[in-house]
Every structure is written in C-alpha cells, then in structure tokens.
Length: 120
Image (cartoon, rainbow, N blue to C red; front, side, top):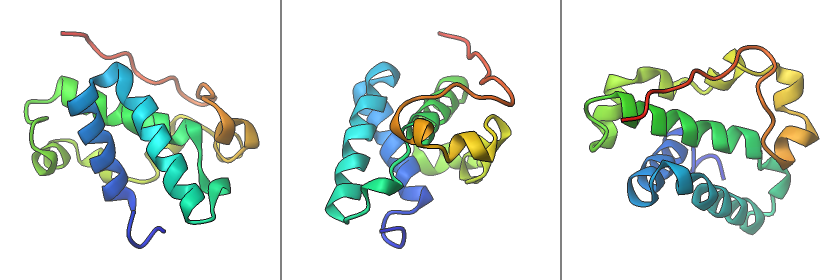
C-alpha cells in the first residue's frame, strides 16, 4: 500500500479535497477514502484519524496562507514543511500519536498546540 500511496499521494488527496470540498468538509472526504483504501488492502489497523485530519488541516492552512495554493507542486515548493512526514511529531508525542485513541478519533496535541490560522 505505501509504495503506491505514499506521503506525496496523501498530500495530493488532501489538496484535492480541500480545493473541491473546502477546508471544512475536506477532512470527512479524506477520512472516508483512506479508511476504504486501508480496508481494501487488508490493513485497517494502519489508519490513524488524528494523523489524517492533521494533514488535511496542514494542507488547508498552507493553501489559505500561501500564494500558490491552486497548483499542488507550487504549494509544496512554497511550503516544504508539508513534505516532512515527521511534522505531526512537533505537536504530538509518539506515544499519543500512535495510540489506539488517536487512531480511532481526533486527539488534541499534547506537546504544542496547532497554530491558529487567519481566516480571509
């Protein structure tokens, strides 16, 4: 599963969902898709709700505060932190992020709160 649907593909999915559905609804669409893909590949235990929603938030935030959110590659160039798979660990401890609770539902960060982004 990871070979064909890696980090970049997850980011693209989030970017597409945010652009098509808007930042408020994108998370639910991405969650549904990734859960389905994990189940189809016989690996539903790999799904992590907190991680999935974090990346949708991160992409939506980059689109909102950036200047080139209408082009995926340009967005990654403008916000290279998105390509860092370890980015969530700035906000969550490894123990919490990998917990059953974080896999099942959104769990607030225990290390550093997510920054509040300006709304246009």
